[in-house]
Length: 276
Image (cartoon, rainbow, N blue to C red; front, side, top):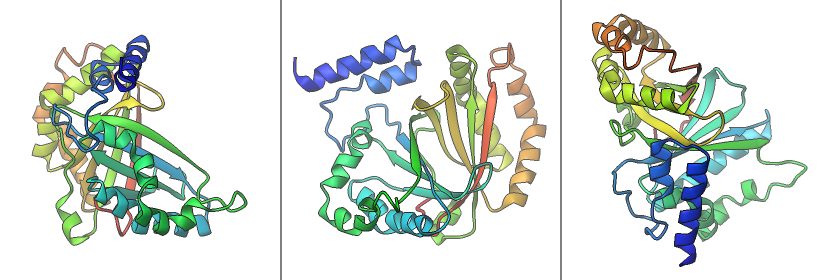
């Protein structure tokens, strides 16, 4: 058996043994012989979400310079765009940076660091960040999770203000469920009408991701965009009072028990160079 196919089979077996959701099994068992720039047959994107914890002072400038001048240009050369970089405003320790990396290819995300390392232009632009000494590291720690887009929202959509670098505020919400069954039911709820409720209420949805690898599983994460916090509060009021939401949330398919056990809510502002 070829080594790549053996690795794919091993990953698939491990995922099944760990009780992954159907979405995770489908993603992890993707043929590893797929070219690195090929699109997954489902047409759904994958998302790598990174969170960098920084220390006030030189690390903030160094990290922003790295993402603006090295990481994003190199990722774009690999066909990865748009890359989003965000600062937390409410809901997380600061300073920190959230980096959203989308791709239609799971293989591209899996080999991202190796492909960056082979890029001479990236290595030159990123040298200060990559070669920071232990006595003055470029960041404290970073965490990463891998998601697959929902079937009903297969591609990331940038808000209209991004094109003109206009003012925008983002909200990133993570829903944890008490079991795989409840998690799958919550994803089904989005695909069965919750997207439309957001749309009718006037929201700008950015992405919806089912977490395949990451902490505190099972969980999903999605991002919304607003002009500002005032418009956010107004839209959420409209959402909660809409007849469509009341009907959907009372449907016995989703209201038989608490299918979401914990919600993490972050308010984010985009870095000046963010492509989202």
